[in-house]
Image (cartoon, rainbow, N blue to C red; front, side):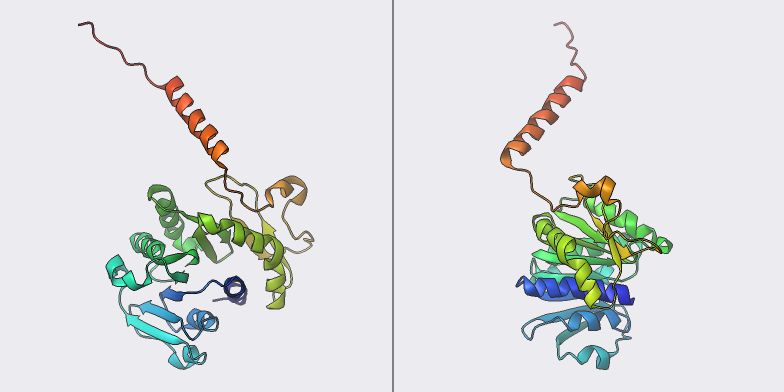
Length: 263
C-alpha cells in the first residue's frame, strides 16, 4: 500500500469515526498485513478485524501493535459463502478486497462485501485502475450493473476504488468536496486535485490524485465542470414519478404494434 493510499484510507476511516460509524472491518487478501495494520489503527476495543488469506504470511507483530482484536482465517475467499459470514451481515464498516484479482473471484468477493457492508460502510477494491489486472474493472461493473445492489462507486484513485451504498453517497461526497484534500495534506500529501466530469444516476465518482506539474486548481476543469462539484441529492417523489411516466410513454411510443389475425 502506497503512502497515498494509506493517507486516503486513513482519511476515510477517520471520517467514519467522526460520524460515529462503528462496526467490524474485513480484509480479503492480507499477505504480510501492511494494509491490515492501517485498518487496525482505526479499530475500537469493541470491534474486530477479520482477515482472510489463502496462505499465512501475516506479520503478526506489526498488525498486533494496535492491540486490535484480530481473527485471522486461512481460507480461499472464493470458497466463502454468505452463510459463513452471517454474523457480519449488514454490520461491517469497512471491507478491503485485495485477494486473487481474478474475474470470477472478484465478482464473488464484491457479493460477499455487499452482504456484509453496513448502511454507511465502505468497500475498497485494490488495483482497480491497474490495467495489469483489467479484469477487476470488468468484474466490478458486471456486478454493479447486472445484480440487484445499491452499491455505487464514490471515489477512485490511481490504485483503488471506494464504494458505498447509495443512501450514504451524500455524506461521503460532502466529505470529499469539503475535507478530503485537507485530510490528505495533514497526512503528508499536500498537493491533490479532485476531478469529476460527469454526474449521472449511474455513475458520479470523484477521482483523487496528486496535482500534475504546473497544475494549480484543486478541482479539475473548474471553469467547465464546476457545476458537477456538488453533493448528490436523491430525486424526490415527484421527480421519480415523472421519470417513471416518461419511461412508460417512450415504451408505448416505440413498442412494436401487435397485429391480430382476423378470427
